Amino acid sequence: MKKSIFIAIFSLLVMGAANAQEFKPFQLYLGLGYAMPADGGGGILVDVEPAYRISDQIAVGLRLESAAMAKVVGDYEASVKGVGSYTVNGKYYFSNNNFRPYAGVGLGLYALGSSTAGPNGGSIEAGTTFGFYPRIGFDAGHFNFNIDYNIVSSTQVDTTVGDIDDIKNSYIGFRVGAFIFGGRR
Image (cartoon, rainbow, N blue to C red; front, side):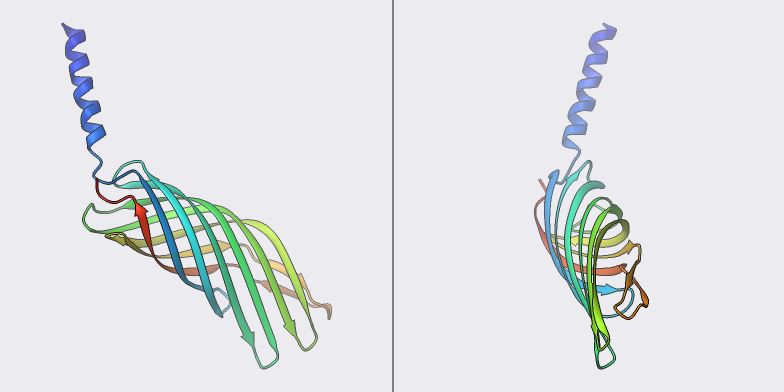
């Protein structure tokens, strides 16, 4: 008797948990936005982010992002940076309405490339480093808006005139996008 009651209660819990999610578990987000480097300038970014919802409130995913940023210093000097990031992230949604604000964090690898040109010559630098980002945003229907601050370590570059420049690689990303799949069941 105890065994059949246990099986009945366990079955009800499993069925309740299986039907508890209001949103589809898989989501594919596509975004386009503005990148603002920590040392000034601006640029564009694009990203693809597949995610899996563990529950309606928690999603884990991957982010593949590419950002290109430029800065002009004075009349004769310019720098261009490219950053590709490959990160894992998590989001916590604060509501289950059509407007769903969230906060999250991500971490992973950032592939860096920069080039500087000026009247005294130029330099090119590339490398890979570890970074992370806190983020906030919201989903509204199948559209998304988020802001994140990508914290990436600085790199040092030897210029052709013997100076050492410290290049800041951190940037703020403002994104607007849409997602397919992942809506309400």
